[in-house]
Each structure stands twice: as structure tokens, then as C-alpha cells.
Image 1 (cartoon, protein in one colour):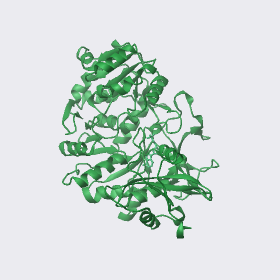
Image 2: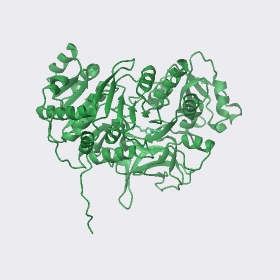
Image 3: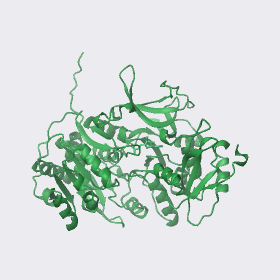
Image 4: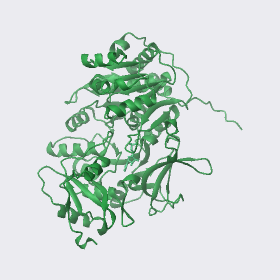
Length: 557
Ligand code: AMP
């Protein structure tokens, strides 16, 4: 029997209609300086400006399905691009501003971007790569373009368009096309820490469903009374889908532009009282250090704060709760998964200590996604919270392939036709769907044939009061094949020793995990998405570029 229901397409045009029909009273506030002053964009105006941008795309002869790059910070203009480009029927390709010129040229050319929208503060980044971007015909610049970059773009044969001028002269209505919900809405490349970056293409349907899930109670519970502050960049997995979720719900947005610095974040929180925020652990770690040195700030407007992208140390969660009355909730996801798949709220009925244990997990798989753990032999392992294997996921906002069919080995198809993405994360899952990760497959340390979890060692080290952050990598060892090397950033003025840290760890992990090799550094290098760059650390170790102290294993073995 066929249903009698309408089959309205699940497209982002529906989000545009929602703000146009019902949420004209919402607003996006873009930070303009380090003091936290903002520029307001009302959602009624956002609707008009989105239509104007669509007319600009039309004037640039953009066709349905064309890719449009954005090299932009979190801003009202980027929000305009977030709506106008997909609703026009083109594909929003968010570009990571921290890529090297070669990587930037690679992803733009691989995607075949015809137009790039660029913040003027990032014009030099684009200019450094523009000669290697043959597919790009036009560069649309938001803000004042310096003469040097203008001539670089022009010398490379690109048409240069001023965003504000173009919008000012465009008509403010546009006949939005009816789109197929399965057509491409946006495109994001993985960070490429293993090989070339790979393209993940989100559909209108996947973005729509993911945003609905973000609004649901088990995720962020976003509604029109909320103010959402995505500190995570809009160029990384659509800022975890938070902008679309906020627009869909009619919630206000606070967009930090390029000012993701502790003092500015504190000013934005106190000034605009956001209720929902999301950022990687580094951002919250830096903010914590600053808040401790600059007491008296109130962050309690934040009712739902997501942290993810890397394991979140429990010490960080504890510190925010006890010192600032803010609960940080860990979440897990990847570029390939839109990204939200797991959220680490504790299950019903558990006491504070047990809840603390759950807060350290990657989280419980949310409705819409499915997760499983698969052993080395390809067998699905029991959901017993003990068996360790690769975490695999499936669902309507999880990619079923990479652009161009690359890395087909990352996908498995079960007998019923379900496609499972092999995440490359190693961990366990329990009977309530909570996933506890122990490592990235590529970061696993195998010592004497047994696995040591770098994540658990890092988390335990981060709990030491004199440690700002730590990274643990496996290094060759003549006896055990591999042993952990702990690379630690100590807090300012601290002289805590390797032996003291080893002693601290000895109460927290099994003895044979204790690293003998230690190195203190001033800072850990970051990848383009703000995570610790372990590849760079391994390279430094291999080049003898780290000062390593080796303690005797002593009673550890
Ligand atoms: P990306 O595609 O750059 O967002 O990176 C995705 C990867 O980040 C995942 O495969 C994990 O390895 C890591 N990741 C994300 N969230 C978490 C988390 N809560 N705990 C541990 N690792 C995480």
C-alpha cells in the first residue's frame, strides 16, 4: 500500500523557507575584533542577502552542480554562502584555511571549484596557491582586497569581484529551484593526515537530517530560545552542523570570525549569553588556562557545550564543572559522518562516579546512526564493553564512498546491503551503545604484541596539575618492538620531572604501559583542524629532533 503522505524534498531550501516564514526575528552576530564587538545580521536580512548572492552566482554563470569554494572564517557572510550556494543548486566547498598552498590547490582543483569566495584577511593564503588553480574563474572577496593580492589574482587570469558591491547591485528576490534531496549540497575534504585529502560530499537530505538530529534532545536540543556559538570552524565539517541546526530551529548564532581566542570567547559569552557551543579540546584547554589567570568571568549561560574531534581529558571536564559550573559533553564524529554520531551523556540511573566514567567515553550512538565493533578477522564483536576492534558506522548522514571512489577499502557492505564506514578508530561498544575508543588505528602502540592505548596515557597525563597537554606516540624498541614516548607540555614555570609524571601514571594505568621515554616541549604542533600532529612528532623523533630522557623501566616490568 502506498502512503498518502506528501514527499516534499528534504532540502536546505526548507531551512531558507523556515527563517523566511517564521524566524525573521533571529540574528547572527559576527565578532569584529578581539574585544568581542559584533556586527548584526537579522535573519530577515539574511533571507534577502541570500537571494542577492544567488543572483550574483547567476551573473557569474554558475550552473547547477558547480562547486563554489569558500575560504572564510565563521561569519554572517559565510552563513549567506551556506544557504545561497546549496539552495541555488551549486555545491558549497568549504576550504580549510590552515592548508598549505599545495594542499589548497589540490582540493580546489580536485573538486573543480569554478568560483572561490574569500575573506580579505585570507586573500594572501589564496593568492599563494591561485596560479595552481586552473578551474577557478572568479574570486569573490569579502572585505577590502589589498592591491598585491588583487594583482596576483588578475595576473593568474581570474575575475575579481567585490562581495559587498556585487550584493548591493543584485536583486533581492530569487526563484529558488526545486532540488532533488539526494543532490550534493556541500563538500568537505578530510584533513589528509594519511595520504591525500579525500572528498566527502554531503547531500541536501543528509545535511537536513543531521541538523534535525542536532536539534533533538539527545544531542543539543536546540530551539528558538537558544543562542548557538560554533567555535569550531565553518570550514570543518560545516561547523559540526551547528549553523544549519540553529537556522532550522530559529536560534540565534554568535560567530567568532577569526577571533577564537580566550579573552574574546569570554567576552562573547558574557556579552551574548550563548546557550550552546562546540569546540575541540585545545580551544577549551586554552580558555581554561586564561580563565584561571583572569578570574571573575561567568560562563554559566552555556547549557550544552560539545567537545570532540579528539579525546576529551576528564580533567578538562572536571575543571569546567567544578570551577565554572559548566558541563562539557564529549561527542564523537568525523568529516565522513557529518559529523555527529556519538554523544557522551550518561545513561539513566547512574550515580556521579559512574556518570564520570561515561563522560570519558566517545559517547552513545545517536538515533539515525548505527555503530559496531569489528575484529581483525572481520567478525562483528559482541557489544560487551570489553571486546576491542575497529569502530564502524552507518546511517543517512554517513558517507557511503569518497569523491571519485577513492579508498574503497574504507567501506564494507553487509549481507543486507548496509554500507559500513570503517572509521579507523579502535575501541569497544557496550550493550547500551556507548563507544569507548582506545586509539586511532594508525596511532596504536603495539608493545610485545599487546596494545597500549595512547589516548588513555594522554588523558591520564593531562590530569596532572602541572601538565598542559601531552601526546604519546609509539617508537621503535629493540626488545618490545614498540614502546610509548610521552611528549609533554608543562604549565608555565613548572619543573615537574619525568619520574614524577611516571609515578603519577603508575596509579592510573597498568604498569607495563608506563613510558620510559619522555620529552618536554614548549608546544605541540597542530594539524589543520587543530589536533595534535602525531605524524610531525614521529618525524621529529626519527630526525633526532626531540630531547628524550629515558628512565629505567625499574619495577614496571
Ligand atoms: P575529522 O574528520 O578531522 O573530524 O577527524 C575525525 C577523527 O577525530 C575521528 O576518526 C577520531 O579519531 C577523532 N575524534 C573525533 N571525536 C573524538 C572523540 N570524542 N574522542 C576521540 N577521538 C575523536
